[in-house]
Image 1 (cartoon, rainbow, N blue to C red):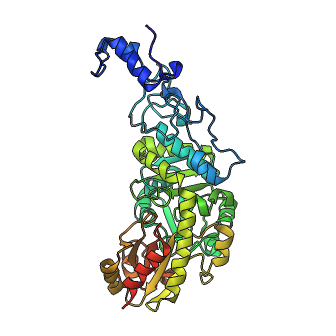
Image 2: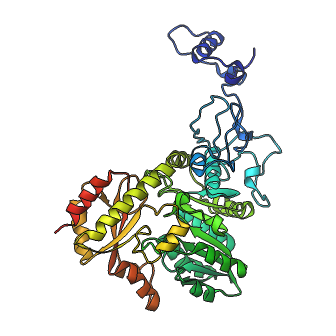
Length: 466
């Protein structure tokens, strides 16, 4: 008896059910049951996807992986897309299986000595996973990278990068103001492993140049930086890193590939917290590092195999769904953010507004050169930030008072300067003064969502007013 093969026979759903019923002797109206001893005779899948690399063309039509003629808007939909060879489904599958069937002699029991884990068949989800692999290829296409490795969180992506390229006796230059998880990891954890760390104001290339040492191996910056939206001239810092034989990684979470492509400006690695704007729905954690193939594969072994920071397939599927709308979302959010920033500049309660798209931003010219859109984060100050934080939390009806950013709903939170200095940044002297120029006694970080601009502005107006 031939095996049932949905692709080979191209049976309709009804015809397939009738054939199963005939083979299994089921009565009309009762569910067909395949006897245990006949299961191997009637495989219901058309192919063993454990041996189908994600980059292979599908069996229905060739999906554009990263065609140079395609715009990034299109790559956000089609980059790395694999049409299911059995069902021809267009939406990506969720491969939840931890392990995959393999042929003896294929694959490897240990990742030790394996230069490229993605060249192996899918073996174990901590190494590679079909759904996660589609996400990696799409993000690589958007960043113009050779490859990408997805991780469980954004800080896992940063940590894997640090622990891959830094060892005892090495030196890291890091932005003195950046994502709290990266900053605290660098300042508190890396020195325990004998790694020297120098925080520098990355908006001043001359200070970065002065920070290099013979043992400097990595420069890590963030642009725009969270939470004060100070920018880094990525091309200038990349040039310095190359001159000193160091790698450069850029946390581009607030920019996203819609606004900035760090690799095109000379960076070696582009890092994102996928939890934020790229996913855009506030329902999945994730991170990614994009870059040259040799660098990415070194990180892949550390992140997934040895640090266990692999991304779950469900999260990858959710983030793939988010990427489908990334470009129109970010453009809409950026347009709304510009309207909100302009409104806040004129509000009597607000004393200062920082947004890269405003002419008043001290690095507005750099923003115009380096960013295609100005992003969805607006920072603003008021006279009594503590009191206003309580007032916003009580009055807001459209926006939400909460941590995190980059979701479909607008979110605002106060980042108190005294608390930030006591805990995360611990700046002093000129670095503290530079921070206060952007943040004062405390800065409200507003992550703009997809609400109608008028509704969001009206909500902020009533919540801010005395």
